[in-house]
Image: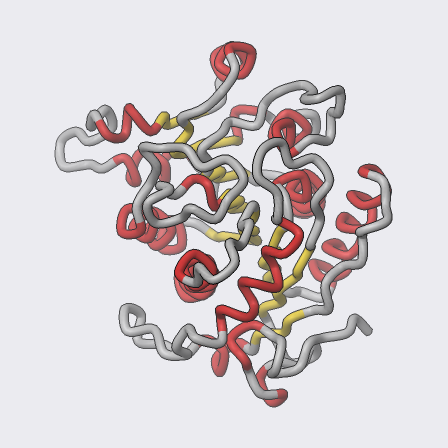
Length: 299
């Protein structure tokens, strides 16, 4: 059986009664993978920082009126040991571990690490859910065929996903930094991309409908959510390798996640690219609270 962390290290600091693997519906999977970061580093420390900060997130969610840990149980696994593995071997281990969790009927939320991990995670969910679509919250489209001579770079993760999932099943939100080749791929392969400047200009706010409504309409029933933390504006999320201005803000992202949870079946999720800054606590706590909100909204 997969090893879990105790209340001194697990997500939210949950006692054993509600955090065993056997009795928990939700599983937190820490994946401290960092191999291809291209600007600021530190994503390998992201999962641990999120777990530590989560001890200061209240059990009770005032918006949903729930304490989800007692409803479903939340188990936190020992971090996957991949520090000495090459890209393909690391992704294979992530793929196999995620598969075991899905087979056990768990709702998996993975904590990165860099965005590269997501291609292995989505691949497992795509095997199980044939109508799967992907919501990608991100500053970057991550559609390069290779970056720094590496096709497994974090800058290429969605290009890899497009190799086994129809590009039309991908919905990107908050994009504001990309190469021309990525813009061309979006047009050629009919990827739904809501650029940050379009959201700010109100392009999708029509007849009482919001851009969040537009996103929901574009997704299939079964949805995987990948949340690159740099999708948020640097003013509230400076702790990431490549912060980009004109990002998304807390309330509008929560409205999106809540709407997805209400109208779709979210089958799994990840939160990646947190690069903790020493003695700056609020970004870590923000990331931890996003995970808590995901559980509240999606289950």
